[in-house]
Length: 113
Image (tube, rainbow, N blue to C red; front, side, top):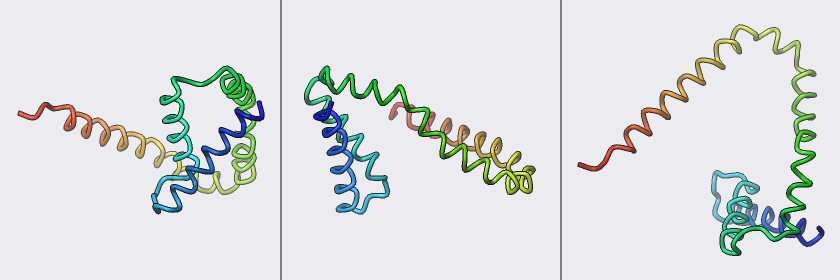
């Protein structure tokens, strides 16, 4: 388990180093995930120990949402004050995002004729 945890942390560190060195607008941990994916593809998949360690982390993934939930609860007064704006912004931004994504996919999916 220590070896698998070390691999995960080293990939995150490498992703952060790459992100900082190249000045990319992508978070370092996301770059680390990309590097981990490349490593796993190169190795032909995760080993048994890495697989068990990852499943162990997934069991407790819900705990990562506790700080976000606490943040929402501490800002309830602010949320109430801006409830109308939030109620409008969320559906409008979702619909716009879907429309832009759909239009882009249709444009990119067209064969070059």
